[in-house]
Image 1 (cartoon, rainbow, N blue to C red):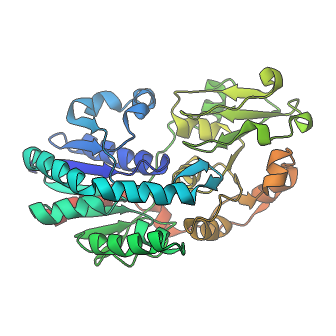
Image 2 (cartoon, rainbow, N blue to C red):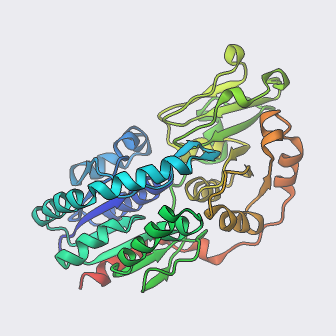
Image 3 (spheres, helix red, strand yellow):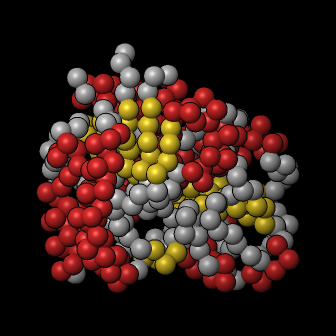
Length: 371
């Protein structure tokens, strides 16, 4: 098989985009020793320590590089549970001002790099370059930003949504993940399997590795890149005698009086920490839902604000996951018992699509599209 260079543009919105795309690219590079990749994203290198722990970084680090490049705006978050749409509008206007110069610089870079394929998760911007340079392109994701922005009535969002539609239409192939919103702006699409990082340890091995105690329930707080304000919690209601809060995030921490019952485990292989825990408390997002599925850990999920992806994620949670909704009120007052019992007892309908090998499907698509 010929050498292939991948140039991947990955959204910096949260951790879900980079965690899944990086996982796919790493596994593809392992399977194809002559392939190389560039990750163009605000995120990526901060995952290197966990990649060392997962045992795969040494096999690929000479064939992958990272560039700090922002190819989309996403949604500005106050924290993981609340969005700032006014600031998002301002970011959109600022991005549009700089778009032509960004397009020129990225086009010149790719002319020199000469990739065989341009991969986007999930910006439309790279398709302007792939179309101009006649480089095959693929989209990977469970939503497009034009669909997200069309949900909001503001003229700025509505106009930008229409602009992005024309850019997505330049994509050669859209690889649509499960847990998806409707994708209508990409002309040719293909549904693929569930993509996400997987644990290396069994539950027993993981609990032992992290020193978890018998008879204690461990709740992983998974609120991604943005976290939540620990002052929202009613700490006088917190009883750490039978429960522990586990924090494994890269960018945020939670503080309680004397840190009683708070276990902080940074720079870990996150899927192993997820498997070790009894439950994960989260706001629904593709990354944590895919990784929870592979870890087999029940999910307690709460509202995340007016984000149109939420509806589709919850529909899948309710049918195919051991999961239960928990209100902000119950979350912040530590009233978790009912939701925990409901999650454990919930009925699950297995989806055969979740069992498919998404990474192999992506690799096969790359080979097909560059012929």
